[in-house]
Length: 480
Ligand code: TNX
Image 1 (cartoon, rainbow, N blue to C red):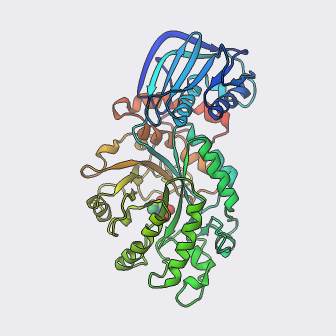
Image 2: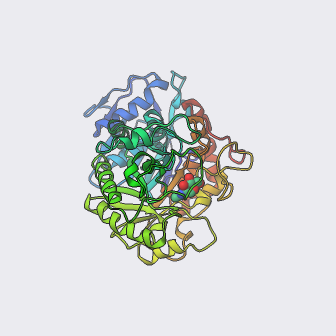
Image 3: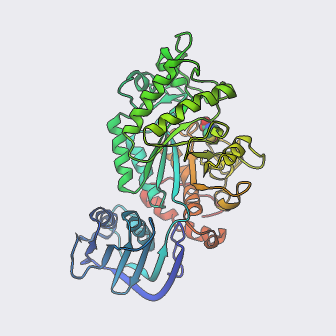
């Protein structure tokens, strides 16, 4: 295990001189039917082996064991010449042990067709657990819509890097992307277009359920975001009754921000918010509901606080925890809420300071580090640059503990992908890989285990894997 290329780097690695070889007659014994099946399905195409999964095989080559001890997401992986054992207290931990094991095999294991072996794994012991319990990625399906299959594939890729939250930005000026049964015009009318005009679309509640289930099977929790009171042109366009004059604005297909607002003094606004949040909460098994709150530039500060003072308790009453962009800071604090910091250094941000002063938990999405929509360099064909260029190294080389002024309760890290300029799966891949794995390591691995030179060497080994999996990553010349 001296030269392993596992990303995120495990907390502890103890190499041995042993080598394990997976052979055609290998069986998997698993205490978890789902994780056993996941592993076998990941191994079968390239190895061509049958790899039966059984709860009680007498001589398994690979054992996945649920045990009494261990942390919530931790695992232990022991590789000896005659077998491999993964132990974890939870199903999530077992799944992460399996991800590590897959990365210990030759990269050709990711091929879709049978390859030559030998399928060797270096011997030793790994003991691993995450630094942060919230390790997220965000996909904006509002500016450009992406269908279920694209989202499922995105989940597959992020879960390989032990990311465990998918935040879906479901509404914005350019589109409303989740069906609300009590207000069908929201998605039907509000979801009909996207940036540039043509296209658009939305998730039925059955579509959303498929996403949530696929994510859950990979230990990923979905956080739905309904952005309010700004970023609401699509809703105002779909529902004339939300407008003071009863006249719906035109659909918006540009890329400006900050012009729209729900009408804070109008009762109909709160009936709408209540209906929407109730349905979104009902179809979301995870604990979080994101209510946006960013860039409400057309809402007065007083109106903003009035609005949030009414909306936050609705979320709590639905049994969910409020998540909002850090502009929520000055609004009355809802117990337990999470403020998502998306600033870029160095200016001290008053809204952030207000959130910190109120004792909000903070989710770190520093725009100059982890915004996947920023260009890598001036040459990157798509993306923004308002927070600067973000090379893979920039995304990697920072310490969450020293980012903010003073101590605070950090919930974790999330890398958002805004999609004003992201229109295809290839666009998603280009901006996401290899930077998301860099952020995943920031969120998972102990700071003391991380350094750019080591990361770069490990990350480079993932290029061939992405190629085999059809991921159109950016061949960042500082890495590959
Ligand atoms: C700011 S980040 C926004 C988004 C844009 C993004 C583009 C945040 C909470 N709001 O509306 O898409 O910049 O980088």
